[in-house]
Image 1 (cartoon, rainbow, N blue to C red):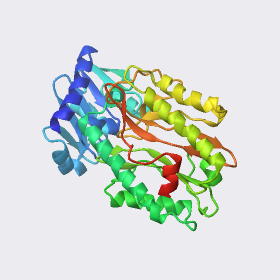
Image 2 (image 1 turned 90 degrees about the vertical axis):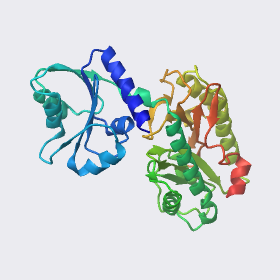
Image 3 (image 1 turned 30 degrees about the horizontal axis):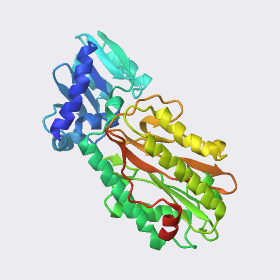
Image 4 (image 1 turned 180 degrees about the vertical axis):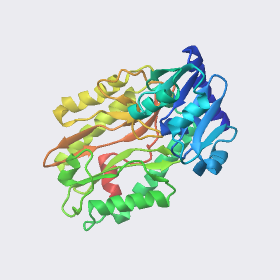
Length: 366
């Protein structure tokens, strides 16, 4: 585990030396965790030309010792702001070039760091660590697989729970309870539950609406294990003989399966989005698919790259993405089918393949 974090910091260090930076200040807490394993808060990481230093506070002394074995740390007092700790550790009277994460450091904190380091030159960077995070290593993939398995177990447990008198909120509460029961640290995001016409809300919040009389139920959920997330969507089918529901469902499934077949290293993200979008457009529902096809995820639920019309990122082995086409019809409802995939050397692996998704399989499940 230590080698994994050392390797990641080494990649940042080599980039910094190449760019002639004297130090890199990591202020995004997710990136601090990715580079150190530290799960606490209120901390920065300084990556220098030859060593690294975690800036934390005395609340986390024991935690840093347990999670970051071998990493030097500076523990500030409660009265010392992080920005002042940066100045103290880098040195007000020394000079150099400091790279900062422009996407996470507020203007107010930036100004205070500039005051603390009057002889230093600040250089903004964008997505320096985030680009490393695009490729998941074996330990990350293992945690993601576990998060998917945990979420899957919770979903299967809904079979006996889903009855006409249950509400969307009831389903949300039971699903999140089950995920924790099966080992999840938390949910990946606020669970999305939409019955009948409310399934037309791609990110609809659960309501008190009951399932009685509804044709279908959209469920979008995910679990966190070891800090890593999963993101899945299935549609529970109640009206098994509803021809319109079957038609819409099978269009979405066809689009998803076509996109998954097209995924391989060297393809660009926008090309995969176009594959699914063309299937839905050819079926006459192009304007009813109103979001991107998918996104990467890991320590955060939305990471880069994305399967969208504007993303030209080239796919590489080790990327983990969602594939989630949908059709949403106001006043009727919506269908979205979402799986998590791993880009491999020759194509992709569907990590959530054990959850049924054909129309007839879903009908049998519920």
